[in-house]
Length: 426
Ligand code: UD1
Image 1 (cartoon, rainbow, N blue to C red):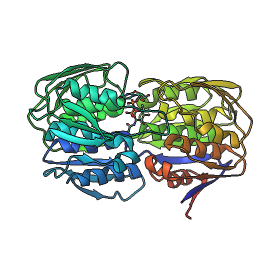
Image 2 (cartoon, rainbow, N blue to C red; image 1 turned 90 degrees about the vertical axis):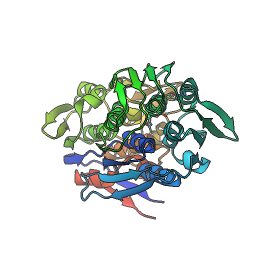
Image 3 (tube, rainbow, N blue to C red; image 1 turned 180 degrees about the horizontal axis):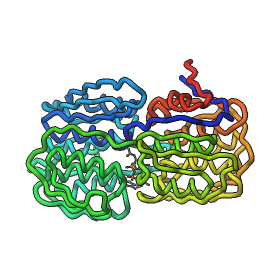
Image 4 (spheres, helix red, strand yellow; image 1 turned 135 degrees about the horizontal axis):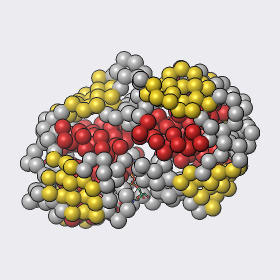
């Protein structure tokens, strides 16, 4: 299995192109199931998760063709043709690999009137149940039951619009309800909907496909169902988690990096913290410039929250920065249980972190030491890469497949910006 080797202590400079957002692309791909016409997605990131979703869609009879972009900054183009669906079954093997594949449930049910999709099962970052997804579909009139670890749903007479109030914010459940509501009979109102920009991107694509959606970007989405949707061409939004990760890379390593394609508004909560910790962030015609020159970053406290709060998907990365900050910081994880798996690995590099429940107390040290470390999940693994950029000596990150799930050609992007980073094939 490949590993990533980082020799720390190099400042970063130059440009890093930001790819299309993984968490938008996967749901946009699922949206292709809603129409018999081809859906064309541009700026698709080159990721293992995207390939896994393509494989799942192919198993339903969807034609998927990909044209690779020529440069690192140019995304791929994907044509999805769900003209003839031959199956509505998503196996445990498929869903286990990637939880987002559960997201095919809503569109399959809405278009075909039935689906059988494996429950995602346990996950490295907490229980992650799906009852909100199922409650939403039930509210729209679907029969839903569990059978041998599978969710089976049927709505032979079609779905009907409903008022769904989510008891807490869930990105996935909002998207399941939204996708299903586009083809339901009548009006659906989704209250306490997730406001994450990826939900907005999905809404914009659905509207281009003929869906009627109001309240895009707000916590209340109103969807008037239509009889059918048509094809369109949609450009996937830039990945705010990737942009935020490379912003932190520039701050932890020091130097000045332009993040080409990054959108300030989408990472405002992170920018506020980075500025407080001593970094400078300015707008450029093509994105954002992030720099830190000289002084050690200062410690800041962080609490994760639904958008526009600080994203849980950047918690591990900001913690990596806090391990080398001046002073102590408190990092609270409010979205997922058990999302501190990077902490023992950071400790192997000399970080001082103590965990109590959902809170991590980080005491900054003046330097980390390179070490062999193990990636545990997607965001945890990239936090180890960030720590490696700041550490003295060599860091070897194992289980790189976690990184390949969500970061498009990370080592190429970072080495082009001056980092000493390489993939070691085994
Ligand atoms: C999505 C993102 C993930 C991000 C998360 C929160 C994708 C592919 N993944 O995951 O990267 O970290 O949003 O921003 O887009 N929950 C329940 N019951 C449910 C649904 C959710 O209890 O039926 C809980 C979850 O366990 C979690 C919280 O709600 O504690 C938020 O989860 P949710 O927003 O649904 O996350 P995902 O959509 O799975």
